[in-house]
Image (tube, protein in one colour):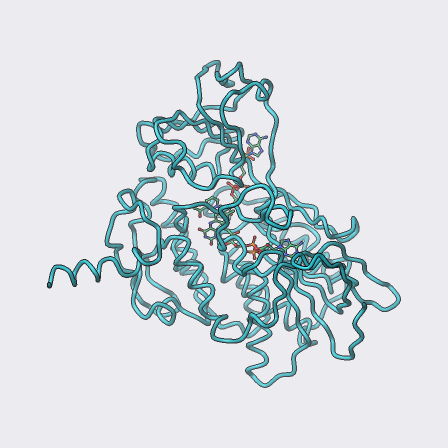
Length: 461
Ligand code: FAD
Ligand code: NA0
């Protein structure tokens, strides 16, 4: 069932923000009157949006595929929305009114969909379709990709000149073992399966890890009524100003039934354990020689300009970095990738690419703190922006906002989401949300966007 075609073909795996950015980049070129390759995107879920497409399910989906989603109920943006705004589709254009800087997940999901719904981007996507295996044929110089159409349980193969891997990397849990854990009587799970803090009301919760998931799930449990939250760190504590019922302790050494023992000799009893221990970059559909093997960091090795696989630049990875910048970085990457696939960007020799990669890796090694990380990723994005016509945006100003955000979190982890920022795309200042984040228990789009107006209308009546 192999397709034959003369037009160049591009295959995209995943219709999350990265895959959608790639589709949008081609659409922008088409609108500009350019001839674009034939593009097909394959998405294993029934809808687009990747992580932002919330799933109540855990484990496997209705077709037996591993559930991709790691997001949960009551998830609010963990950074200011002004730091991720698309520079070709502003929040103003989408919502028609200023909104706050930290919207909940359904509102950001709505925003992501806005610019692609305007075009017929859905037509390019085959939903409920999993990429199963990739083979690169040296003779034809094409990728032969095996897919499973989950709905009708059918396996087929298609050929592509370019393959864009946009399958995300916050989905396959990194789950460490601790002695005695198999005897722990309560629930033990990974953040990937966390679907909301409701079950932990009045409970004593142990969280392992000291990064974003640990911080946010810890705060969520506190907000929704957990009795206490203990965060156990391996390298460094998060070190913000915690409320009284949240504390940080050194790493767990072992369990004795429901008692956890820590490195500092202390011990405590817990009702549940949540591993916020990060994720693995996992590409079960890629053969060994093409698999990106990396930890979660700001510049994975082997990727020229952070996207082109150096041993075979026709294999493109989007969004594989650890992320301060998200949607706007995926866009900047996708535009550069598009230009290469449309023969508008010259690819230097493998050796020159290696030198460029090494330059970034060396700079990455020297970073000391979060401010440095922000500057590094900003410099990377500016480099990308210099290579394509993705609408320029003030990356330095966004960097300033990220640093403000880091300081706000240090000062008060419970109120940082009440702060507001100014858009670098439109100059619009965000609105203060009608309810303080700690008091807002409803994360629906309706409540977020319209509650205040309906309350005002009621008062008028
Ligand atoms: P994903 O969103 O993960 O999308 C990848 C897509 O590929 C999925 O739809 C998946 O189903 C599909 N796929 C995977 N494998 C296959 C296959 N074999 N075949 C076909 N399709 C496949 N970012 C922010 O900017 N702000 C936040 O507040 C924020 N909160 C987050 C909270 C959590 C809990 C997590 C885990 C991440 C959060 N992020 C946040 C980061 C988030 O990962 C990015 O915003 C964004 O979703 C990454 O987009 P992506 O397209 O690269 O990957
Ligand atoms: P994440 O926090 O899930 O964010 C992903 C953490 O796991 C590190 O603290 C690491 O410690 C620890 N760890 C790893 N192995 C361990 C072990 N064996 N024992 C103890 N600790 C261990 O993952 P990482 O990779 O940042 O940290 C791993 C993404 O999800 C982020 O992009 C974030 O933005 C997103 N996210 C967003 C939100 C919201 O927006 C919420 C959750 C997650 P160490 O020692 O390596 O430092 C609301």
